[in-house]
Structure formats: structure tokens, C-alpha cells
Image 1: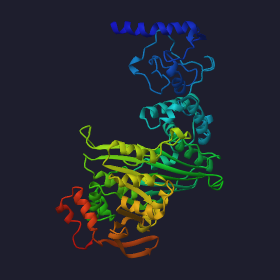
Image 2: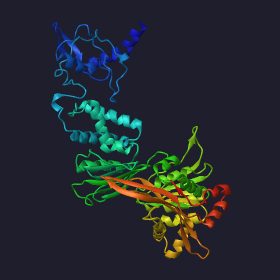
Image 3: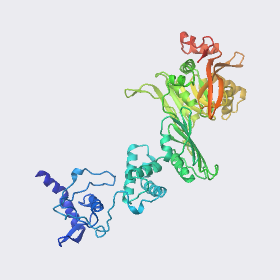
Image 4: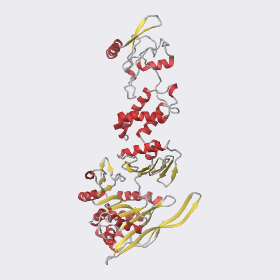
Length: 556
């Protein structure tokens, strides 16, 4: 038949050629001498099933007469078997027997992973061995760990390495061992599931055996899991820093880096921390979820009128500074404010080292808003370094309606306030201890760039940012906008601070290890007449303005 001729033309000559090139003389049960092939490649008729037959039937025992030898599924080194329909019945060419492994060119049959003599190998020893092999040959794939194709490829190489060397570790099946090796080598060990999990905002590694996870709902959990040793912790953290091209060693024991556009990491090692600690790290994860107005209201962060007021400020060209301590929710509030901007307004974002904002909106596969996301680039070469000051200068050339500066930490504060004073709405965040102290903090940052008297700089920053939003994380880990203030510049040049909204705590008690805090937001003073005029001049309808200048009232 045509199918039979095709099979012979494809496989029979190859098998015959290999048989002629490398054979072994053996004596069969009938006393006659036979030639058997010693080639055990993917085209060999016995390479794939020889070990299996020996394992099941025993070395030197003949196969059952009713079970013809078949071509085993080929393994191309990727761990993927060939189509089993490619099997060929070789009963006419070869005797029905299994081969003695010692006499067949030293080939040793084995099951894919486990053998009695090495079931007790130590995982860390195996990890180091596999790590050296894979990183030496396929380091480029490891750096592409986020790519699914690269991940699958690395796993295939690990599988082949483990199979070829008959590696086994007690307590692991074959697949479990490969997964564990991949996770430790190409990912971030026990931290992987938390880094890429949902609802997690921060991971704090206090030492190799003390790890805390902070969830978005304010809950902090001490993990029972920990690293195997201080050295293990250091190695995992080094893999994280490798993503951003940073090196953690004795010459650089304090490092700042990032894992992705929304994950930042700060690390300390010896000699800055004790030897028995290994490493200390803070991994900050910006929640990729798009917060809605209702989420803030339901969670008690702010009231609807407060959020409406802040959104109106940014839309109608009034710059806003969101202040607070670390973990107070500044970035979350700023991100939501930017999400309220109409599609036709142009937004230019500037972030330091890592991306935390994601503002691009799509509908039916098309981008509907106008956003330019940028981030700084650090370099030892000064000519290649791009800082926030440089990006602020570039931003003004892109004709933006709104400039978002991720966080003011240094002299870029001066460039930001200058941009705000030329008519562009600026939204930024800053670390400060109080609403009143925010302007003083701005002045101190501006002085890093210019030698200007404090009073002059205070006039500049209050003109640039009429509105300050102060965020705080309470003792129970809940987040609140505790204050929204307006700084009014009076005709004589003096300044007056208006407290527009405030969060009042009515009860704070400790029950066991839990803080019970009760409070409410309330409207305090009205906005100034100068701010009202500015809203009108920038296009706000008077009817919309009226909702923000109603009588003082408490809001739940």
C-alpha cells in the first residue's frame, strides 16, 4: 500500500544506515548471532522504549512475542514528544528482545527522573548545579523571564538537564522539581506569589526569616514562610535587582531598583545590617486596579463632594499637591485624580525610575485619550542621565494641559513650581509631616536648585500650588484624606490658609491587638473669592461652582 511504502522510504533507510555504522553482535535465544544497532538518537527504533522495557520486564528478559517493537516518540531536547503516529513497526528488522545495557555501548536505561541512588539529593545543591548550567548557556532567556515563550523554553531546558542526569530530590515529583527549580532560578523564590499576587501593596523583608506582607485593605501579615538562610535571601534579592541592572555587593550595600513599571524595591545588606540578618528589603507594589470614586467613598478615604472638588481643580487648571507620609495613599489618590481628566486634555507624566501610573484608555482597540508617559533614566555617564528636571523642560515642549510629577524629592521641585506658575496645571506628590508643613518642605527642596531667599520661594510655591491634599494612614492601617487646604495670597502679599475639608477622629481605642478608630469628614471654610474667580476664568460654569460654595455642613 502507499502508506507502507511511504513509511519504508522515510525510516527504513535511516535505520539501516545507522545499523551499518554502529552495531553490536549478540546471541539470541535461538543460538544465532544477530547485529543490533548502537545508535540511540531520535531516529533509532529502540532508543525511546529500551529503558522502559528494561524497567518493566527486567534487563536481558525477552519482550512478549505479541508485543512488537515500535519507534518511540522522539525527544528533540525540548522535552516535547513527537507525534506518536510516527511510530514504525520494526519487528521484521530486529529481534523481539530488550538489550543488555552494559553490553550496548554503556547506555544505561532509567526512568525519566528517579533512581534509588540519588533520590536523597539536597535541593539547594541541585539548584546551584542547575543554575550554573542554565545561566551559563541561556542567560538571555532568564532576563526575559516575563515572556511566556522564554519561560516555557527555560523549563524545557531544566527538564532535559534533570532527565539526562537522573536528578531526584526527596519530596518532589519530576514536575514539582522542575517548577521549584524554575521559580528559584528565574523568578523570586517564595516572594514570587506575593509580588505578582492581587491586593498586595508592600512586602517587607526584615531579615531572611522575618517577612511581612501589607495588603490593600490595611492588613499586615507575618509570613510563616522564610528563606533558607541569609545567603539564600541575598541571592533572591540580587535576582530582583538584576532586572533593573543594579548590583548588590559590599561596594554597593544600599540599592534602589525596580522589578517592573509598578514595583519598586529598596535594599540594604551587610555591613549596613547584621550578618545574621542577611538582607533587608522593602518592595512597594502600586496596585494596578483602577480605583473608582465609589471605592474611596465606601472605604472612608474621602467623601463624594471632596473628590468632586479635587477633580474640578485639576480639570480647570488649578495645580494640586498631594502630601503625606510613606504608605498614606498619595499615589493612589493622584492616580485617581488623573483618571478623571477628559480624554481631549493632554497629560504628560514624569516618574522617577519606575512607572506607577497607567492612564492610557482604549476602546475597541483604539486609544481614546492623550497621554505621554515618561520616566527618568539613571546612568554613570552624566551625558546619558535624564532626570526629572530635564523631563520637565521637555514636557513644556509637548503642549500639555496637565503635568504629573510622580514625586518631588529634590531640586526638581523648583522646576515643577515654575511650570505651574506659567499656566500649566501640575499634579505632584511629596513627603511631609502635615498640611501646613508641606509648603515649607517645598521651599527646602527648591533651595537645592536655586539660591533664593525663603520668603521669595514661599511666595512661588504657594502661587504654584493653591491646593494641598494631606493623606494619612491611621493606626488601624486605614487611609484617610485628613485635610484639604487652600493657600490664598492676599492683595498685600501675605498668605492665608483656608481649611476646606477635615477628618475628625471621635474615638480611638485599643481592643486586644486591634485599633478601633471612629471619625467623620466635615466641610470647614469656604474657598477664597480669588479661587472662585480663577475657576470661572478657566471655564467652570457658575452652576457647577455653586455646589462647592454651599453652606458649611458635616458629611458622613
